[in-house]
Length: 331
Figure 1 (cartoon, rainbow, N blue to C red):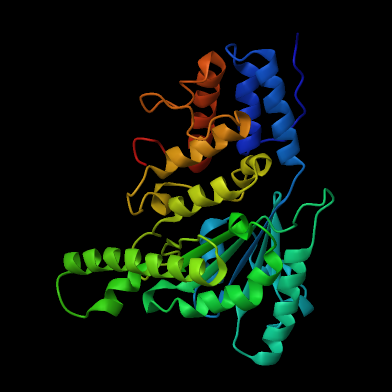
Figure 2: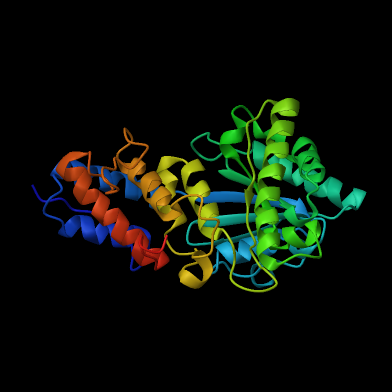
């Protein structure tokens, strides 16, 4: 039996996987058919993410750091859309990013709050929520989590629906400045240690408040999307969390074209986990839903899923490595 896959265009993660699946002699026809169906479904879908936070916390800079190929807002928005009382929208290659900066101006924020709630309550053609993931951003350097909790309470949670934590991610930006807020003295090494400890304290406090107030178990992820000096921090961790939280069929589209890539942007992280391996595990689960851990054995992706899983694991690893231009040796 000869499997004919639809053309997915040139370049991109989906196209790379397609080419490797077609050339692979170790995948049986049923597995190839599964890849074909999932990749076709993914390519015909659209990922919608809403980034929201107070002005100055780095909502737009976080978007720009993660999605390098998205056009800048001024390149895509009409004059009416550029108004400060509107939620902005940018799109490219199946990725739609909604950007909402809360100004503190009562009238302008009232307009935005209405738009945000409407977006969260909107459904797609299949009756599923339009917004796949809400990313609430706060300034980690200030250690003031109350404003983020308030934003979630008044702007997001009333319209997020049941199992809202499955569509919610909280991001503490400007984590590179945590040490400065703790102490102006001491060695840089000590400050970093204090900053890491503070992240744990802030994360635990935020998680407790979310459970206590809303019954949601949400732990923030810390990053520095646009640090004062050095490379961005923890972007690879953000991508690993995003990948896991997205619906299975949409995960390949996240990596198709628009994402940041390269060691300079992705290699600096908190080293609490092998985040590239986490991404691979989530993508493997897209095609082999019975495995949430990548079916790893001895660290090898797909090793426990027999010959088909082993071959698929190598394809996914190579494709994600090509897309992000990273290696597992690094991350």
